Image (cartoon, helix red, strand yellow):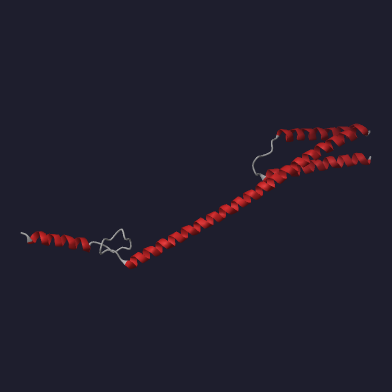
Length: 168
């Protein structure tokens, strides 16, 4: 009877050892299941994954840097356009006052006076709207460019009227 437990133990040990597959992971495979070549393959794969992850991180960091630089450029443009718009608004107020003064000094027919008064009324509404509209706090460059273009056109029109009255 004593031989049976020894034989059974040998069969169990043999079954356990024969059921193990070789692996490159030192945490798996047991005493006879570990393979050095598979371990090298596993290390190579892990190194490859690590390099790919580092490359992705570097790409994302470069993309983030480029976006930050673009954002800073747009903020600078927005500040510059806002300053230009403020200068144009002041110029508009000066032109408006000059045109009003010239209208008082010049003899104008009723049609010309009404036309200039309508122009000045529209300009006064624009100035009131501009004063009531706070400066955008974001870096919206496109809307500021549009506002600067409109202010330039309005000032050009007022300037032409002032010049026309000065030439009469």
